[in-house]
Length: 294
Image 1 (cartoon, rainbow, N blue to C red):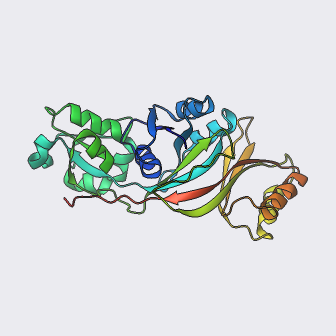
Image 2: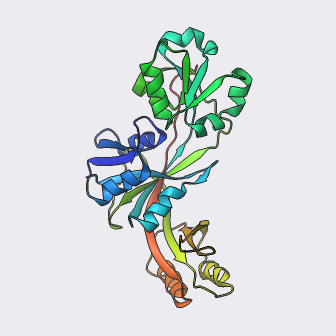
Image 3: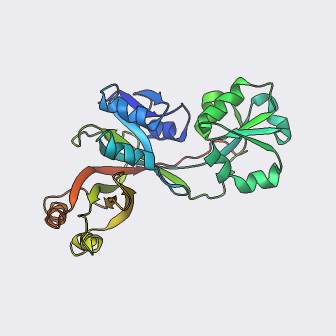
């Protein structure tokens, strides 16, 4: 069993929450400042697995993750964690009874944008300061009790930095979720969560179309359609070799078998496509519940 798990830090971010929910406290959890640093660390053997975000329901795909995997470090996706994004309004305990009079709100720009309705109604005209992450915002509030400042972050951040959640679930959209990929240099690597039960099986392919061939994308989709392979995602990304050159990320709702997916890959290659397996893995979903109604 692995005992070093790297993740996009700092501590108490949503990525850290996903790591704790999936791996538990029995493993060593190692935060990294950026997605490339985290991916490089598992490629270099500093850690056993890396956990990085790949997609958010509101913001879309995390392009840096896939671009780095394709162009820089060819790792495999060996698991997926889907986590709800629940934002809470928190202050230093000394300001618990005076939280409505804070003069500054600190958080990541995405978190502030996701809580627009609450902030507009409750703190109209107040100053927003942007942090590198929600975890960093919570850490700042914890370390500056003398300042009239609040943070928007998750429940883990409140526990980690000793803050008081004075208003829970202030986000605009309650169906907001983020996908996180578990990465490893080998596609044979396996790690079964002792805390979660897989609820889906997936295979992710990278497909590059042949140049100057009309109808190529239609032919690619047909290779999956007649085999009744369900595609849950297809997305294009630039090859970075010139305008109009793209590759496609395709998610299939099943693990690689002995017939259907290999047959589809063989058909695509016969059409002149380049196909690369990015991973065949189990997907897990977690839920976060605020322990205390406020």
